Image (cartoon, rainbow, N blue to C red; front, side, top):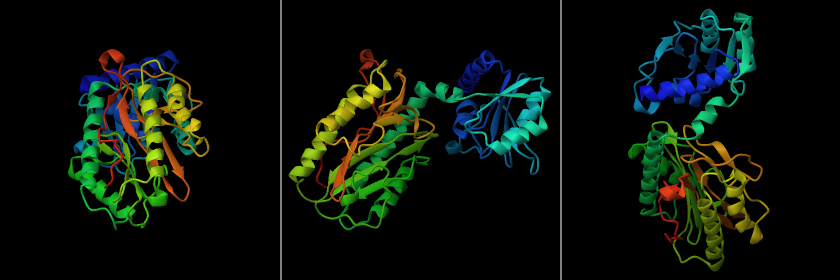
Length: 369
């Protein structure tokens, strides 16, 4: 992996030099981990003119796999004692290495940190690195996709086991906690985000926070969960009916959302515009009269963060590349009745390679549990 991290830093260095900066300060944790292999709390990465350094406050990075392991070719420097701010120390080192311009992540750097750097190295010109690292992270290599694939297998396994248990009478909160425990039991670093379980009138709500409502016969039950594996995050969402055969309105709504989700999945091809993927799923729901209240986007990228670029939304600009993992997650919620959400994580692949690779494989059949 050392060569992988070195290559990533080399690509970022080329971007910085093209923009007139001889060094860069990376402070956003996911970006630090992408370039260094680990991101201890408060750590920053300096891409210097002479050498690259990972500057950490407090203890050195842990060797636990969940926290990542630093690139062996990268020097790790721990600030002694309180040591001050690693970002300020990194800027001071950049100036000491003879740098005249330092690219920083202005979207992550606080005003206070910016002022502190200015006060310590007033002659060092600060340039905006923008989303340079995020753009490098967009297309995943096969090692990254392998981590997402394993995370998806863990999420599938945890969900499958829950569906085999008795559900009636249990609360949303209890089911969410059990799912998160099962994720860890099966090898996940932890949940990729707060697990959502919605029953009855709460089902189908995006981002629903579990309550003490108990599962009842005839409810829709919607579940959205994700696993983190070696730092990489995926997600899956499914909707089921509890206890009895689905009512006609439940079958009709489920079939509609399933058709929208399938349309979105089938549009995931290299070169497809982000907004066209959104449109493919959204127009199925629009044509059935559900234009109001639809989510702002149909899906998004995943990786070291659960919500990355690209954003599959009506006004999103850009086109898909191969090896970009995304979610497709349309849904409809009917106030007072409940709703349906279906969510998969997929990797964009060319048609010659079989088309989009589905990572989350739990059945999308409307099951009565």
